[in-house]
Length: 285
Length: 316
Image 1: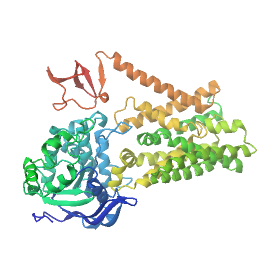
Image 2: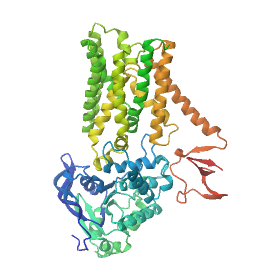
Image 3: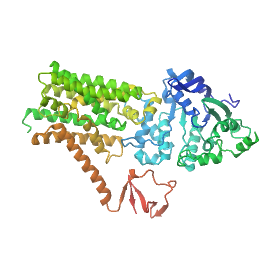
């Protein structure tokens, strides 16, 4: 644990959990406890297993050993799925058939609805609210295929919010989104956190989220290699810089094939933790 | 034409298949599984062959075979292994081969008979068939409309549906069973080899103009009913197989709709962009130069100025 003020009850907990596909565990013996009100970033290089950890939490990848608990209930028996909002890493929400922002966001409400029940006024109100929160209120009837990449990401967030979740699990919400849009995203998330939402964010770049983070967990080679309060992680005292840089450096700052999503140029410039002091501390070690 | 009993039955059967096929097909299109309907038609042919050979109702036996085939296909797909592709191919070929052989073995197994099952024929619908088709249509429509939000969610983003606790395998099997039932409803008028076209084409036509899932489905049902009853009528006067006639009519409508949409874009006063051609909404952040223009803002785009106007941009 971090020694920081613990804000509330357990939301997501892994106990010596291994997650993998078939006989190939990607993540091994991970223990992690996220409490209500925390804003946790899972950081690590590509292939480190940070996405696999959340896929294990969400039931999208099999947990082969250990245990995953959601709100203190073993995940396999956890039925109140609406309490968890999932924002997958997708660059587009548009399918083969045209659909509107409202139609896509409404599918996030289903976790709260019975099988045959038509949507109630309350359902429609929450969906409209979720669309407003992400700033797409005036576009609610627009086909999602007409939205920009950043706007489509916000549709995915609204979809997750439509179930009125207590925790939001986001996979790379800022990858491929320009600086202006990630700042807007962070402002939106800050409002939600103020309202009591817990956040678990998988990211390769914590800089855009720095204003709201309370904790940074570093993952490398399928294991948790560091866990610090955000203020420490962002400072020169951080041990994460060593861990994270130690594993990342070989590929870090390599330009991508097209300089597009992931914005390697920017990651190279600001570093993982977005703090020039960190690089100072690294050269000092 | 309507004084013939067989024609009344044929048109009723066409109406039923015209309504149901697009409603089920839209989910197949959304999941990019347009060819699964085709495969189910192949599998159903074995059921038809069994029905013809044993002398019992070929429609009911075909229903049993295609529902079983649909469940098997979905379970094989759910395993998601590379071998699943081969397994599906074996089922599809096995289905059509079994049907052809079984029908050939039966005393009534004439080439004309086989052709009627494969490509549709207006004289073949019996009163009993109509009852079966009617009940199936009501059930298929009730499920496809009643569970539309869930079927939409699982077709739109299967992984998200799973993460939010939906029974994804159950919904996929359900969709496969709906597809199998639609194949059976279509077997008299459209034929087993062409039914997939009636699930897909009306949706393709609807997408030319639709901006929402709901409007897309409504337009597709309208198109489905018009082409299936229209094609059946045409086949009466032209003495052609009804299934082929219906599908050619649907393709003609598709071509006309596509060309009309394109011409509307070209001819419309100033050049006029469908918003869907834009990957984004113009705004302060989009990177296109903003030009204030009386009461609104134009954005410079490919050398001309765009002004938002409803669901598209006008050029100013």
